Amino acid sequence: MLTQHERRVMDLIDESRADLVSYTQELVRFKTVTPQGDRPAEGDDYRALQTSIGEMLSGMGFELDTWEAEAAELERFPGSGIEPDRDLSNMPIVVGTRKGSGDGRSLILNGHYDVVPPGLIENWRHHPFGAEADGGRIYGRGANDMKGGIAAMLHALRCIQKAGIRLAGDVVVQTVPDEESTCMGTLSCCQRGYRADAALIPEPTGMDVLVAMRGSLYGEITVFGRAGHAEMAQPHWTEGGAVNAISKAVKLLQGLESLAEEWRLRSDKRHRYLDPDTIVPTVIQGGEWAVTIPEQVKISFGSMFIPSTRDAREAIEAKLTGIAATDPWMRVHPPKLETGEWLYGAEVGDDEPIVHIGLRVLADLGREPKLIGYGTLTDAIHLINYAQIPTISIGPSGLTAHMADEYVEVDELVDTAKAIALATMRWCEVQGD
Image (cartoon, rainbow, N blue to C red; front, side, top):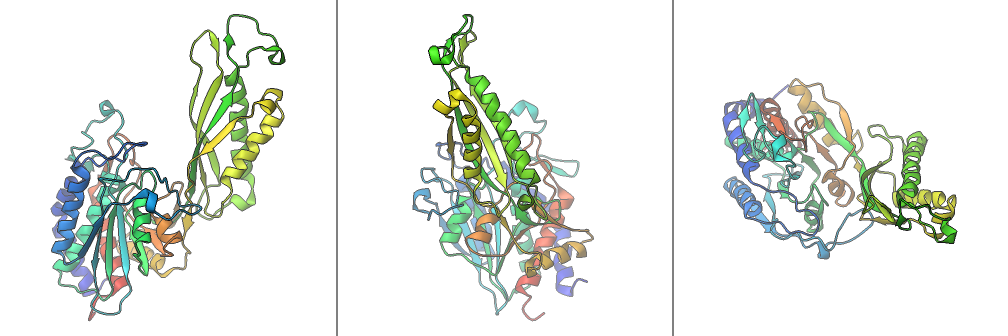
C-alpha cells in the first residue's frame, strides 16, 4: 500500500508524462555512439548531453563532480576488463550527490549514456537519432538501452523534489560512458571512491528485477596453413605441399561447439537465473584468392560465463591444444589464441534488502515481477564486485535493444520512473514520514 507521500509522487509522474517523453527524446537526439577500436569519441554530443544532465542535477541541489576517465590510470585486476590503451577522452562522467537530511540509507542511481552504432540506416523506418514519438513509443538508438532509463531516474528525482519530499539518505546519480564496450566509466566512479548502501540501474529488464549477469571474454584464433595453387595437385605437406587453413579451421570450430556442449552439461556451470557458459564464433576471415589455397584463417569469438567461472581462457586454450594434438600439421603449427581483457560476471543474493524493495515496488505498481539474470553484463558488475554494493536493475522491456527501430514503450517508461521513485523513497526513507 502506498503512503500519502508516495501517492503524491505517483500522481506527479502521471501528470508530467509529457515532460518525461520530451526529456527522453532530448537525450536520444544526442549522438553518443560508443567509439569503436582505437578511435576517440568525436563531436560535441557527449559533452552536450552531460552538460544537460549536469544542469538538471544542479537545479535539484546536487553537488556535481565531472571528469574524464584515463584508462591507463585505472587499477587493473583480474576481471576488470580494463583496456589501458583505450581513449576515453571527450566522454565525460558526471556524478551528482545530494546529501540526505538524516541517517537514512544511501543509494546510487547509475546509467550509461553511450549507445551502440545504428547499423544500416536503410533498415530503420524511424531515424536512429530522430527520437520520434509514434503509437505510444519513442524510437531511436538508445531509447531503450538506456537513455530512457536515465530520463526515468532523473524524472523520478525531479518529482520527489517537486512533491516537497526530503530524503533521509544520500542519493548519488552517475551518468557514465563506455558501458557498451568496457564498463570503465562506472569502474572509474568506483575507483574514485563513490560508495552507497545499494545501487539501482534502470537497464531494460522487462519490469523484472535483474540480480545476476554473465561475464565475457572476447578473442581471436589464428589458424595456419600453407599457400598453394588450388588447381594443381599438391604433395603431402611433409613434402612441401599446401595445407588448407579453412579445413583446419573447421576442426577448431567443431571443437568450440563441443566445448560449449561440455559446459552445458556440467553441473558446476548451472545457475539459478543464468544459462551455462558458452562460446560462440562470430566472425571468420580466410583466403585471398579463389585459386589459392588459403594459408591463414582468423576466427573471432565471444565467450559468456556465469559469475563463478574464472578460467574461461584456460579452458579454451586447453580445448585448442587438445584438437591440435590430434592433427599432425597443427601439432607442428598450432593455432594461436589471443584474447582481450575478461570481464567478470556478478550477482546479488535473493535476500538482499534492495532486492526485496525492488520486487515490492513493482508489485505495488500492479506488476508480477520475478528475479532474472542477463546473458550479457552491465555496469552492475563493478558496483557489485569492486565496490561491494548490492545492485539491482529495473527498467522497461529490452526486446529492441541494439536492433533497428529500437524503441521504448512510454507506459513502461512511466512505470520505470514510478518504480525508481518508490524504491528511492523506501530505501533512503522520507524524512518525517
